[in-house]
Length: 421
Image (cartoon, rainbow, N blue to C red; front, side, top):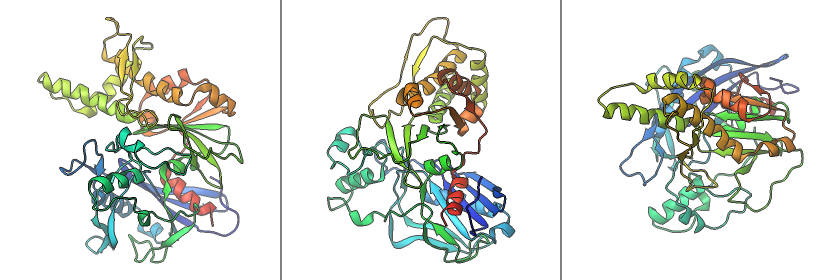
């Protein structure tokens, strides 16, 4: 990591409020650059099956997310937290939370020090939410943006509430936050927090995707492939690139605003590790229906081991059980089924290959080559723990693939604060 020129913060806390976990990272700055001093992550287990949730809704309990954040900070060294001067915040993108007026949190002294808890807030309606049907989305005004509106996007969700739950129709523009520059200061901490001094500067919230890319992307010829809950393949566009003025709803590639006026070309698939998790859940359910109790945590390593024994499979799996934003009604399918390839190993191998092929179909190799890609940086929890996925990435993409590069949204959020004094 390179440090910013001139004097600046010496210890920054980066926070990433992810889809399934929360992470906090302490990054320190020295004359020799930036270094990760300490980090901690906690599963949020925040998914909510609220009886009031909409059909196909995907909501999370905000209190559980904040509780996981407080647990992360409580696990970090107090001595280093006391040196924090800036806080960078990142998190899962597109979703929306509502809170009342100046409420939204309350401070508690019940633990080792002051901590805030969620108060008078709605559930988080996440980016995975499916309540906005294609018909509903086409009834909305066209956005003045190059990005198409999709279900799970906060503004679409607000429109849905205005038509289905709120008294007045029309979009409440006053609810939208002001857009600021990355790295700019949103405010200061009002209380000491897990040892962090009162008055520490807090940066505006940043997208977890951009922060993840920022933490690892050093060359414009590198593409970043991330497979975690979902999957993304991205590359930094050439200097001076400007996206089209109007969105193309049929395009699988979206241009995300990045830092310093740059843009990322992103193929953002809704299907990644969540598909593998659904497959494992299906196997566990079948076993239970046959009278056997098998823990899902025991199934995953076994099916991966079985797939490693099958180097090839003629099975073809289109794994898009969650659709795609540019094709929301897309379903999954299995074809080329032969009697000799019905083992769990064959199916798992084909499923992993299908996930990578789906991403490649969204951002074709030829297009990557035209943009000058020379290497792929592989990241994400699903890719890290699944050797079959890594084999399929290396088979499908004709570029060297580098694993083990630090790709971390919490670290990226901290780095932005260092580099944007």
